Image (cartoon, rainbow, N blue to C red):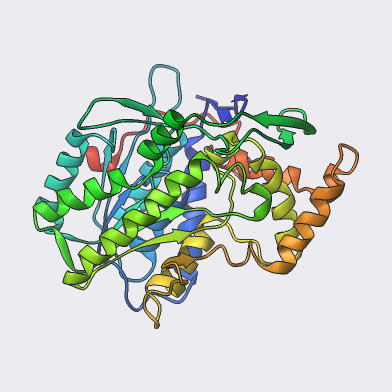
Length: 397
């Protein structure tokens, strides 16, 4: 099949297997060029491992120096009829091939990571193949969750909690500014968002592994979060998603107390703003991204996904100082984004943004390139070539 991008709103309905493989290999090559981790994971479970920070975490764990065996969990669609697989599927195929080529153990589970069924299958694989794990990364990004105990389907929303919120927004199709108003969330919407994006499911995973005595001494578990600047606070950190992140961080503190008895730790890493499939759907946030990224690139402090995760592993959790956190117990790799000079420049640009000067103050071409890269497009590969699109996961054979 010759595969071309088909973009609808904030999603691309096709993905390119060769482009996705190129992207994964780029990340592997970056990690291999760094000074190897002297300490780090040896048996890692990555929950939400097919894209973004989860995929990058799996790559760092496997290729960062300690050659970790990895089990990945994700919910992706394989190719069907004349439809390509999702990008996350192709990413995972490429990762497994690269890991197996270097003699590393890599196994993946495709299914609803919120379900007790998938959780049980993964725990059995950990028990049988790895005899335990010393790293659990929780990096799920889903708009909905069917609760495994109650059967209730919860859906997340992005809304303010106190009053309506009106702000500038970027129309990504037309590359023009618009005004958008988000209505205040109902109490039910707040609770439902917490149910999807909070820490309950993370704790369920730790419970399941602990019951089978699969948490190895010194185990580390990490979940990922975002704080962001004052500019996005009403809609993000002080909104429904922020309440879910508060719950996630409270869960980390509870798990941390529990795991310390076995020399382990639980920590939330606060990462920088990056273009992802989920962030592209959030109102206001993409406009902030394009302004932020232009400024960070100009100042030479921009980091992509794999660079962020390498710095997290090498400097914040597996470095010579051990786990480094702020006063709230958070591992911070959003420090460059929140640097005062960076945020001052963002505010100055935001105040004068217009359709006429968007290209002056915002990295819109970079945003669209990053977005297309998520699906395996706009890499130096031959997109006119006929490629095999129905690729199986090597670990499923």
